[in-house]
Image (cartoon, rainbow, N blue to C red; front, side, top):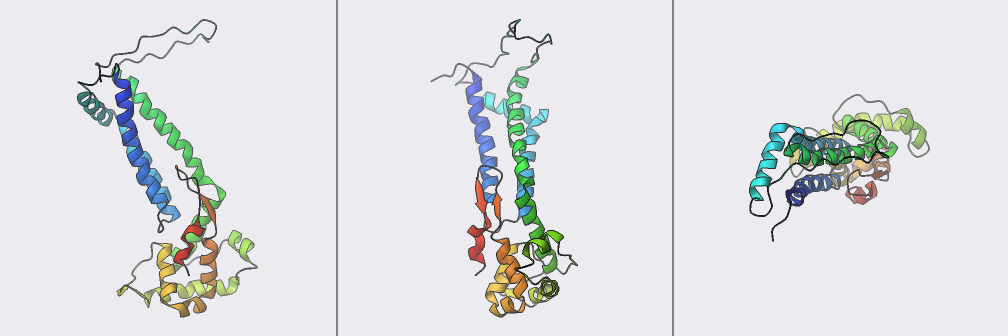
Length: 244
């Protein structure tokens, strides 16, 4: 069967390209070991991967490959006929006119980017940013950096956690990490919350020794977070199994 226009075939190729990028992003966002910073990085990398096609060189290469593959399936692409806006709907400004066939198809890339960038606001939701604060506090502490417990954490969990003990336990955390082995290998740097969970799980006495850190981790895994792209509303409770 031969398609009358290239538009349909181009749409299918663009869908395959965009869905493959978004599928990789979705898998990353739902990973058990995924941190909030990983989500930011993965989302920005996905946007950048599509943004590359705004570049004339990249888009021309993609467009020419689609045209070449569709030579026997579609008629050659042509500029659409310019339609005059009815006078009753016109505001007096001149209509935009595409000068090349490539520009006609390139607008689909721009629409897709606008749609994805609209999802960026999901990264600015309160719970998402609050989760990032938890991660920074624990990961920085695990790596021996000097940290301060934020006022918001102190205010929200003052009745659940002894803040004075927590400060002490956060100072002790990097020493416990250095003395621990995972699969027989020493830990040089902590980049995942899951690593801290593994250390506590494999050394049960550490849960008592660092009781307030253990409590903070359990609270971290109860924060509800809306994952931004195509994954709906998720929750750290789904990963709480990593901390027994």
